[in-house]
Image (cartoon, rainbow, N blue to C red; front, side, top):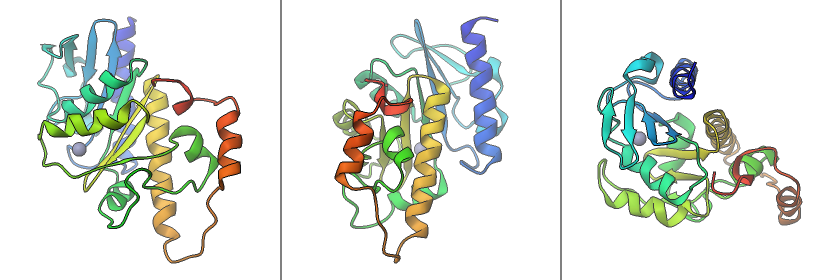
Length: 219
Ligand SMILES: [Zn+2]
């Protein structure tokens, strides 16, 4: 099987897994993967739970549709992230409940909107910038993402949800799941005195060889 066909099947498998576990609902959420000469992207109005690998949007290097259904209306999120992260092989965007809930909270730190509660979050995501609210389809959202994506593999869109890149599709999916779990912990612990990792503990993780995720420059 060709690399492209393997990727098509993997996008459909991961989409179904994310949907079946309630990590995104309805026709929300989208997935893309880089090819040598363009991208595969999930189509507009498609449920991640019922993707047909043969109908995924196939885009050329300029982002033009070559085959398959029309791409997600949120293609701009993906393009902006890929432009700033040349080694990113895949991007996952979800309207996952807990991350979306955090994205609606007032008073978040715009430079880092979730605390470093676990080492896994620090290793896979690191600092998570909050991108100010933009209406769906606003081209200015791409610029807002580009301003942060060169330094961060993940961003949280205000009143919306997370966008996460990885060197591979599985890596991006694992990282966005870690982000969602940390958002859940953050909400569970609200009102409870908590002890996030301290600066020394974060430096120790930063110095260790990263297993995957943000440790891959540009992913
Ligand atoms: Zn969205």
